[in-house]
Length: 178
Image 1 (tube, rainbow, N blue to C red):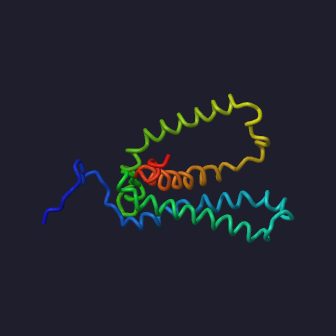
Image 2 (cartoon, rainbow, N blue to C red; image 1 turned 60 degrees about the vertical axis):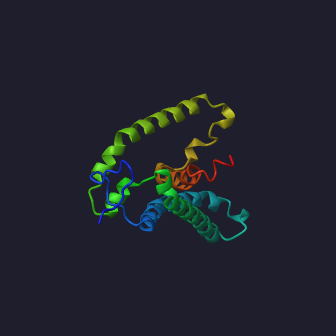
């Protein structure tokens, strides 16, 4: 029995796609270490200001983590639901979940990813040098640790933006209102 394929679909190079909700669950789990890291990084600041908190410290930490986990779940679910409509894919995770080698999927993304990363880092560095004093960090020594920046900023925020916001706005649901 013949199966219709979208125009230009090349099944020889496309990894087998896992179920979209299974993929969403995997993406959510990949973003959760960033949620835990950012909540853990908030602990010293909250502990110093514990007397000002409306709830016990443990409750504030739990609710902060829960809020971010729910927002991540909603963004990933929205992205999974809309991904096929706007052309978003997760080739490395899809390959891994299908039991295929991840290397070929990562190689296709390596050069554009490196160029984008270098260009973005150079732009941020330039902006930090040109920013007025009022916009400079007040205490760079107490900035978030590198692990938190990589886990939350590198993975969790990427899922929030690419899967949630891009999936939603790329479909025209938001662009008609903006």
